Length: 91
Image (cartoon, rainbow, N blue to C red; front, top):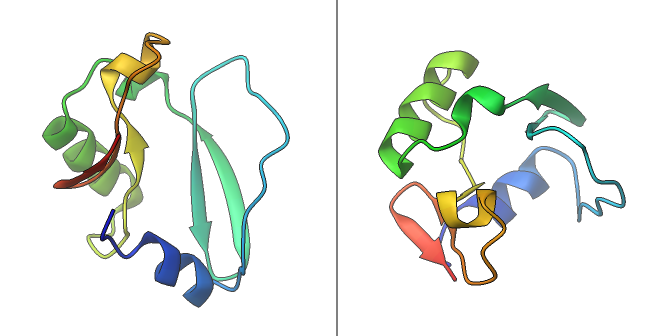
């Protein structure tokens, strides 16, 4: 994918992250300084990549976060989708 997500997770104090649960509602995982927090994310559904980037940066009040998120196809359970990191994609 070519983004900073992996190195930034390591800098936050984690070697890896395993998520064994499934939320019935849309959530976002915020990782920082040895802590993981889950926040409600229904308000992000249906947004374009640039809209999600702006909304998350505004909500977190920090422009330095590395963002990784799913595209609208994944939100709608389409089997072919993208994981986005700002202007980079993995499909």
